[in-house]
Length: 495
Ligand code: AMP
Ligand code: MG
Image 1: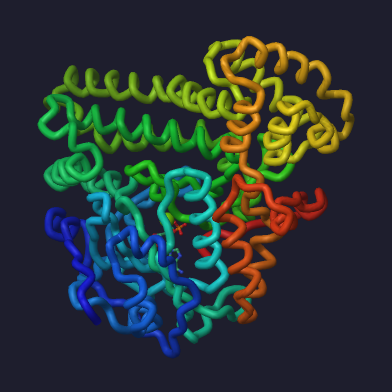
Image 2: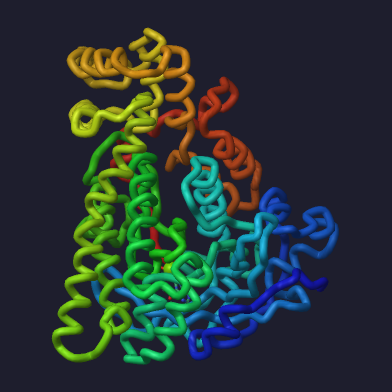
């Protein structure tokens, strides 16, 4: 296959952090999805790729001539328990491309067969979960939330064995990098400080080049990653996104959302919402995400600690602990500021009035919770309310009059704000999506695709790519699921 123009900086600069490995050939590959816009962004010739044997390419049967596939090593805390060796058990990094805007992007397979890190797993993936990663990733991108994205999905023509046989598939994923908290934990757990230092330098060069040569570079990286996570988790919370498996190996250093397994979006607002079938304790519940992010960052800090400390005597280590703790302790305030910034936009406010706005947003959420209101549509209905029509909001509430007090406070606050009313409604419609990936629509599309019918998937994808435009023909994608469907909804991990 023609070359992609790959570089291989990760393999070159980080010896011992990966294993060269080949994908398992697919029996009868067929292209299910190809992302023309993303290919173009990467500087690839989308038309030529489509015209060639894209199925062979994106199933791993015929790689670009300059691909040098590797399985990356990493460790991680999964549901709080540490595994010193996880690694790419069913993924391979093919190489890196410099995209049209000059950014380095990883191109990686997921579901391409067993690797030395597969442990008991089969290294495979099924069509449904890989198309799910397409749908949610593209939806997040359209919602302007940093995310890895899908370039292609190819069916392998072979079954994978889960509770029942399912059609297999390989996803080609594009990421700012696949560096994770768990990448650092891998070397820290082995006490390999030389490799840890190299990983630090590599990460800084790739994601935070302004820190090259900084005197407190490890601490500065911790701070930069914590700030990115504060911004990311705030965006998740303001979109009603539940990642579902925020293990430290699934927290990207880049600040992108990564690994769409058991993720879901809120329907009715409920901080305790959890959909993952294996999350019995609600560790990764919607409302727990900021606290878990902080917990994961504390694990990142621990991994970096030997580099933060200027010496290995007790006072130096104590000083490093205190410095790292300062960053971890600052996280809740950074998160709160990011959350409020997003909430202010979602409330249609141009100016900031700190505590007052935070209270207004908190009381709004309390109202939605008490009234079991649909999270997405309730926010969206503020645009109508800004135009004088409160009916769409009231129709979402169990008791329509419950909104009276809050609405008059909001109006009073808006009256003191710089926005003209028309500008406010338009701004509200840019901040509050009309369409999010509704769980029942996603399931419906994936079930059809698993049976060989891609039309519902394609229609849903088209709807998700325009989340802010209200249009009658897309109404079925904006509808909440019936409450009993949501109450029984479960998502599955590692599938
Ligand atoms: P995830 O929860 O998808 O982030 O995966 C956690 C770990 O399990 C990673 O090391 C994966 O590579 C590995 N893994 C997940 N599914 C499989 C599979 N089917 N075969 C082999 N390894 C897997
Ligand atoms: Mg993962």
